[in-house]
Length: 183
Image 1 (cartoon, rainbow, N blue to C red):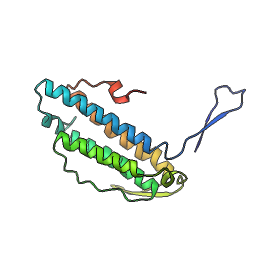
Image 2: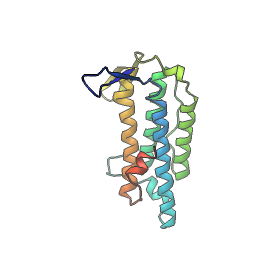
Image 3: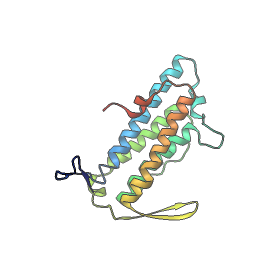
Image 4: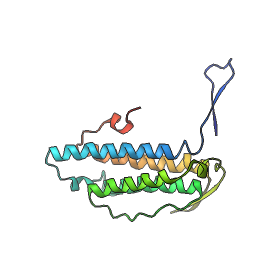
């Protein structure tokens, strides 16, 4: 995949190549790392202020939304399934049984371990691989590149952001830079 950067219309374009791997595994891995940071900071605050972490695990923004645990489970699923689908491999199956803070952190670690097991060669060059997913409305068909950019990454960040929002809603002292991380 090539992205053209044209800073001056009268000059020749500079091109920068980003591979499908570069746009997937490192992005998912970093996002999971930031999610871990959000959880660690929130747990420290909860402990220091006598807040039972179990109440946070089951917290949600609205009655019809997933709990914090559900958001972390879906973020995990989005990146492991996203990576597996574009690589043409099977993703590990993790039952959604996390009930404690430690369970949630362990789920993230297992997901990161899977991502670290996927080789660059399994993903790069697979931009046109067909990807089909089952949805409530039926099947959706993508190329691997379109699937990553238009479904997997937005889905992953929706759940990471919602997890952040649940923590903020419950009074945890996390902010934008905790979400974005250090560069």
